[in-house]
Image 1 (tube, rainbow, N blue to C red):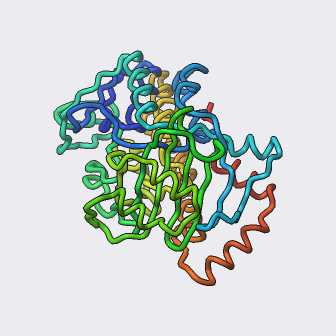
Image 2: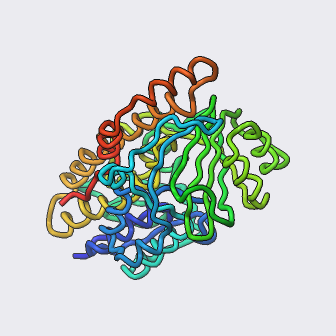
Image 3: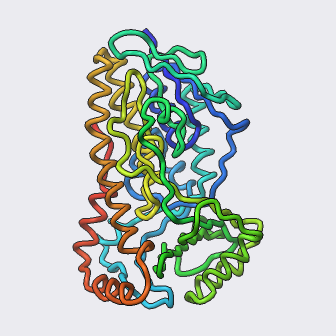
Length: 385
C-alpha cells in the first residue's frame, strides 16, 4: 500500500523532506503558499553535515560541485581587522572547518529538480489554514482538504501549523536585524571571514568564482524602516576594517536585503503530534550565529524519509517511527540551538568597552584542538542508518 504525505512549505526543509519521502516510496504533495517557487535570499556557508544530508537525498558529485565555491572558515577578526581567532592551517583542522559557499537560489533550484525527479507534486498558491493532526494509530491527518498518512510541517519560523498545535511556542525577535547581499567580484582570500564588534557581526564568503556573499548582523529595534538599506549599512560599518567597507561600497544598492532575525528558543517540546512532524525553523528556529539553520533543515528533511518514511513503508508502526524521529532529532537540534545562543553571547551580541577587549584576549588563547572538537560536534553529523 502506497502511503501519502503532505508537506507544508516548499523551502529547503520541505523540499528535502518531500524528496526523502518520495525516495522511500511515498506519494508526496507539497503545499506552498507563495504563487511560485522562486527563492528570495543570498548566501550561506554549507558545512560538512549539510553536504552529508544532500548526498543522502541523492545529490552526486556534480550536484554538490555545482552548488557553489569550496572554501573554509578562516577565523574571526575584530572590527578594526585585528585577529581574534585564526584557524590553523593544519590539514586536519582545515578539513574540520571545510565549507561550500552557496547561493541559496542555487540550492533551492537543485532541490526542486530532485523533488520533481522523485515524483513529488508541488502546489503553489496554497494557503494552509486548516489542520487536523489525526492519530498515528487511527484516523488520518487532514490539512487544507487533503487527507494524509503523514503531514510534514515545514512552514518556517512563523509556522501556522506550530501556532495551531503548539500555541505556547512562538518565534521571538532576537533584537538583531541582518543585511545580506551577493556582490559581483571576488573579495578577500577566498575563505569565510567574520568580524566581531559591539552588538554586531560582519562576514564575507565567496559563492562562485565571480561573486561574494556578505552579511551585516546588527542590533536594531524590530520592524525598523530605513529609506535606503545600502546607505544605512554603509554608515553602520563606516568605522570597520577596510575589507568590510570595500565590499559594501562595491555592492549595487538594489542587491542589499535586510530581515529581522527571529528564533524559537528551546524549540518545540516535541517534534511530532498526531500524524504531524515538525522540521526546520518550524521546529527549532536558531539564531544564525552558528550557521546551522539550512544545514539542520536539510538534516531534518532527510531524516523524515530515513526515520519515518522508509521504516513505515517497510511495515514499522508509525507511532514508533515518529518517536524515533523525535528522540534522534530533538536533542541534536536543541544542542545546536544552545550553541547558537552561546556563540551570540560571546560574539555579535556582546556589548562594547572592556567586554570586547577581554573576550578578544581570551579567544586568542583558544587552541586548535578545541576548535576541531567544537566543529566536529556541530558539523560531524552523518545520516542515521
